[in-house]
Length: 629
Ligand SMILES: *[C@@H]1O[C@H](CO)[C@@H](O)[C@H](O)[C@H]1NC(C)=O
Ligand SMILES: *[C@@H]1O[C@H](CO)[C@@H](O)[C@H](O)[C@H]1NC(C)=O
Ligand SMILES: *[C@@H]1O[C@H](CO)[C@@H](O)[C@H](O)[C@H]1NC(C)=O
Ligand SMILES: *[C@@H]1O[C@H](CO)[C@@H](O)[C@H](O)[C@H]1NC(C)=O
Ligand SMILES: *[C@@H]1O[C@H](CO)[C@@H](O)[C@H](O)[C@H]1NC(C)=O
Ligand SMILES: *[C@@H]1O[C@H](CO)[C@@H](O)[C@H](O)[C@H]1NC(C)=O
Ligand SMILES: *[C@@H]1O[C@H](CO)[C@@H](O)[C@H](O)[C@H]1NC(C)=O
Ligand SMILES: *[C@@H]1O[C@H](CO)[C@@H](O)[C@H](O)[C@H]1NC(C)=O
Ligand SMILES: *[C@@H]1O[C@H](CO)[C@@H](O)[C@H](O)[C@H]1NC(C)=O
Ligand SMILES: *[C@@H]1O[C@H](CO)[C@@H](O)[C@H](O)[C@H]1NC(C)=O
Image (cartoon, rainbow, N blue to C red; front, side, top):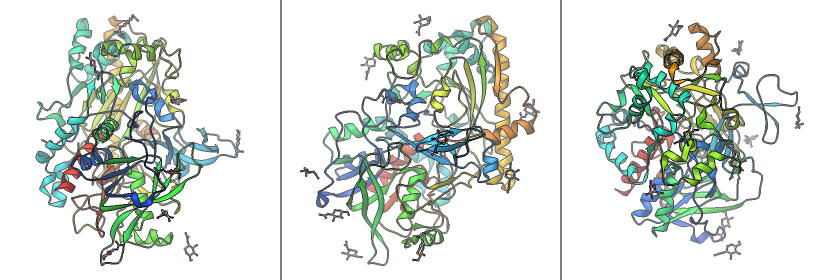
């Protein structure tokens, strides 16, 4: 059994520390900033690892660029998952190129320009003073920010990566990570939504008898796609509800693990509002040894934050044992390069002295492709009645969520992330028997990311989307390159989509064909909707791709123009000793130096599973195991 597709969805950001969490130590006393371990980044890769190191008794410093957003409803309400990505206290506006050819990139109506500081214009015909930015790739700077494991074992010859051995780390993750599905009664109270969901179930061959649609669907929705009881889990097609990382309808995550580790008195120091600018090395011996980091203390320092531009104070921290970088797929390669680890040619261009010539740093970047079919009804979805998604007093759904702490079913629409259920499909173009298409349905108008996309997604209550996530994509051509030597600057991010990326063996066309199949299945589900008309839902019109887009060529062009992704990974891959592009060995160690590891989404040679968060939690647990042994 492989652990490819542990499905734990949502969460464009992971929650930060709550009030009462550890506060930053004093920056002015450099001498005290000496720890056995320093972990840079408190997200899915760094957070659990730092906790485990501290729990084993090692003094550990966890550095996070963002800060404590305790009590911010934007984070604790699952239904605010779109809104939270607009919150300037957390958000980093990072822009990426899907295509380097800007004329082609602009075929996407989400293409964004800057018209002032953190002021954007989206779409064609920009004002004359606008400067090109690209496609928004929302990230967050905040605290607490399933995979082909056998493949890694094979490439590196390290059997500890075998799927059978990786199971134990999933068990460890479940020691601190709660997941639960949305209560089906919340969804089924809305007959129009129910009618759509039975349409999806029907496409998957589990369509309930129209006369028993509601009870039949309720049973279907209680299927757990992650069930450990199902040995064929990663290849089981079907119609499922999505388990969310939440407890009693409140979003939780790494943050709680960090908070409880500190509260229990383990030697974990969390330094927030601290941006690491450089890794320091002792270069006196034959192999450079990582000794610690330089950083800047200050709020919102990274230029992607709308609040950036404030003052900062430099400092240094020393790691007597090891330094672990867990800053994510964009910032980890940026930090390595700024510190002299990367392709010597690129480093030379910036006059950065080379510590380790590793041409693979910032290459091999992979992502999902995502694409929707959006329709608009004449009537509102009842489940969204009273939901204003703005956290204001008139947000009746927020009141309902706040007033019914104990009964999940009564917490209402906000106790779900809005994507109610999914078709799980092994497409005709998949390279293995694993699921490679997830097609979610929900009452949202989701077309991808652009500034204020969260408001647009819920601007009215009449939209429904079947939205496809293509997993096990074949494109490995993405890059992260330095824009400048300023560590507060964002790097240049190129995904090189479809025919501008990996094309060997028709890779781009196979990915595209799978997505065309997904659009077809989404439309089939919309046709099935009418089979259940006795439920009483009204009719709708298709907005995207639109009724005129029917030929495979036209559907393919729609996908190439509008697709997006949100699981960037693989930019510092683990690989074999003789692979010049391998950045890490099988124990997360950066090649060519000592005492330095990387533990985050960048370590995978190939993008894992369906959602990458659970596999990152697992490698975080594995790295702790490797380091402690
Ligand atoms: C922390 O730094 C501030 C200003 O730099 C100083 O006033 C304060 O005494 C320091 N506190 C400790 C505990 O060192
Ligand atoms: C939540 O995010 C919105 C932006 O989407 C922001 O206007 C609002 O102030 C945030 N709410 C809180 C409680 O911080
Ligand atoms: C850039 O893209 C446009 C639109 O797709 C295309 O017409 C043009 O030929 C491309 N330019 C290059 C240099 O490939
Ligand atoms: C650019 O033009 C827009 C209106 O078209 C205006 O709101 C904005 O302030 C201008 N920005 C600059 C930097 O001049
Ligand atoms: C179901 O909908 C009705 C009518 O809008 C409402 O009164 C009731 O509270 C809803 N029940 C749940 C469990 O959401
Ligand atoms: C640097 O490493 C050498 C061994 O290679 C050691 O002798 C020396 O003390 C180290 N210097 C510092 C400042 O740690
Ligand atoms: C503290 O670190 C900063 C930045 O590295 C350095 O400029 C300063 O001299 C250090 N202070 C002490 C007392 O070591
Ligand atoms: C690198 O150094 C050379 C020589 O000092 C200088 O001309 C060049 O501008 C520098 N390049 C960068 C990117 O700083
Ligand atoms: C979750 O809800 C149950 C009742 O449904 C309650 O007993 C329990 O205390 C709640 N847990 C938390 C963490 O709030
Ligand atoms: C998708 O549907 C179109 C139009 O019905 C059809 O021509 C095409 O073969 C279908 N493609 C796939 C991959 O299902």
